[in-house]
Image (cartoon, rainbow, N blue to C red):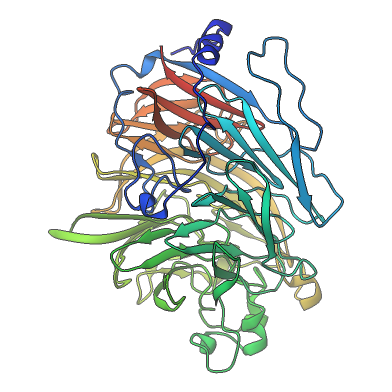
Length: 562
């Protein structure tokens, strides 16, 4: 299962380059409703969140022949990168510089989706966007945003509408770029930098709506906004917590002040159901995250919830809370999977998610009706063995933070985190990475000045039972199979998002720095290469060849069959 890395293969790819930018870059948003297999048009490839490709040229019988087609290392900053001694690509073009600050941030890792439109790849890290030729990876243009600072934890990618690209900056600007040239068209501030908001989400284009989420880790409200992609004007805002007297959910908070500073941040893109016009996404933890006395004893809506909004109006159609009255920073921001499948003996329109708290949920995506709750793995102990009246985990107060300490699973990182899951209509399985971790949680302070946001606790990791690739059967809520990675800690690897294909494959990163192709039906490893990935893999067709694309740190890798 060794991958061949030869300069000859890279040279052949370079010599067969097509003029990727010969035509004007353009994406009709209607194409995202039914994307062609030679594209990757939005965060999950399409609106469903399934991360399933109909391509099957690479399949279980020939994946052992997968080899490196090209690799491109990215360079941040305004200075052009220097060509390596074996570079076959043309020199990098000058960088376009924008921004309202003076800081050129350090090169980060590629953690988000890479769009592929008409033979061009669009790649991001915080404050940076690149266009690469999909045939050989050489740089077509680079845009740099000079920042005011802020939290540069990651960027989840760009959204595209007509001839424009959109991305969020850590210092809270929405930037529109010309997709052909990389030149800036406009930028709009989307949240207050002074209130320490920071923005990471990949904008999602639905028709003529540009959906943008943001938040912070202090005590401000999380929100989702819809922008006009032509002008950058705000169309509507939805706050994840009550903001005024009379708002729904206020009775689940101690008072309005607690609610309006209650968190619920929107970090990760959701999924869209074109039949109902509902955008379905997750919200983050309440604040204060660990010391809940100031929040009151209620559920603290609409934090740690799956929420469905009408994309035209921003009005909420339904919600489902996965961690009522969360006291462990168990965000529920994971991208949900939308699919039609048999459930309870009849076809249902489902929304499926695995939450950071370690539980697995199946809902009706039209109404939000709860259908099933189960554990993704066995270790979560923060909740009782019973479920509440809504089918959500019933929190165990004994596992809240305590002066003497409480042994809790999962630890702060969760059983799952932000990396996207996947779903295969061929197997009917929902796939996710899971890490069974334990920590001692100690109450550090109840002073609201120190306990707001993510303060108020100390955490001491005490070990792990290991990490897994899990295939869940949504009909039963039980694992169809679990592939356990060697060792009991995360090691040097990624666990960074998944991809399924009609070739019967499931692509994943493991806990030891390998990129692996599994049999989607059984979990058996069929191929691997030594890359510690940092984003979720993708696939597309180009000139009759299927490519598999993934990033590791500052480098993008493209694979194809020999």
